[in-house]
Image (cartoon, rainbow, N blue to C red; front, side, top):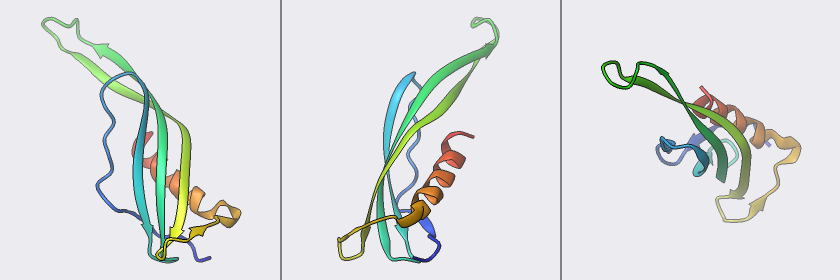
Length: 103
């Protein structure tokens, strides 16, 4: 297996501005190995307020995000299931998802 080059099929989904557990689906394409990867990411979101008093000075609300689980399924372009030997694809998925959703 070659080193994966993962690109999302669509624009990455944004998280909702509400507290709780959110599950998003992201589909990736790996052109190096000719794979399609369907990914489900579970993220715990909390809202942090800081700053103003809520009247004259607005509150600053930030999303605090914690990735809880990354579940994925790999297929070749013919639709056959592919086993991620050594977790190579998972490591690349984790890097992209953490960069996008924990920063």
